[in-house]
Length: 125
Image 1: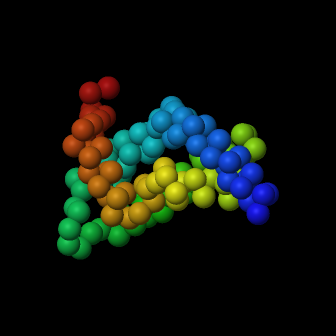
Image 2 (image 1 turned 90 degrees about the vertical axis):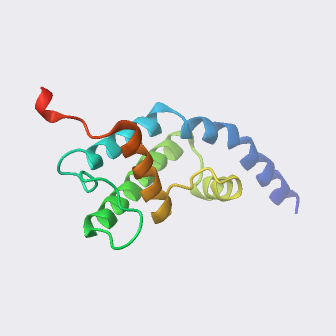
């Protein structure tokens, strides 16, 4: 019992560290760069984002690539900080720190990014 309580307290002490990482450029820049590539010419969402109805097959490939990106960036951070995946998973689930791996939420995120930033114009270079 005491070791579990101690572990929970230790894990909870990691919460500010994880929250800080999730808003850091290490993660936000990686996500932003990924999203921009997906909405630019040749990306899965170059023609806009369809949130309802039948969606192009490329959407799912982009979603899988996004999940892989998150796993890599977050995994690298966890390893560097010595945070176990179990501790991180517990905190993320408990405090909803990483909700971006749901497919519908991913599409909504892409749609919001598309409307906020739009594709870059590669012809202006």
